[in-house]
Structures are given as C-alpha cells and as structure tokens.
Length: 60
Image (cartoon, rainbow, N blue to C red; front, side, top):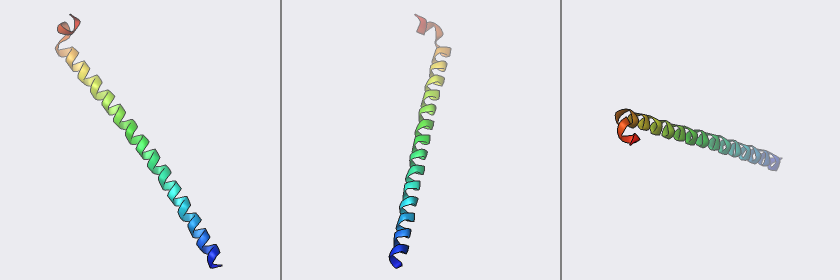
C-alpha cells in the first residue's frame, strides 16, 4: 500500500511539472510576441517621425 501511494504522488508531481512547463512555454511565447510587436511599432513610429521631419531630403 505505501508503494501505491508513493507512485500516485510521483505521478501527480510529474503531472504538475509538465503543466508548469507548459505554462512557462506559453508565457515565454506570449512575452516574445509582445516584444516583437513593440519593436515593430517602435520602428514604425521612428520611421514616421523621420519622414515627417525630413520629407524632402528622403525623396532626393
């Protein structure tokens, strides 16, 4: 009987570890997606600013 209880606890622990790893993977991907979007938006805003300030110089 103690072996069965230990096996059950080990399986529960393993399941919790897998669930935690999955949550971490999801969170990392979400973070990376947010950083990529921030970088793209920042670049777009900077380009818009430069074109707005120097429109004639960029066209030549």
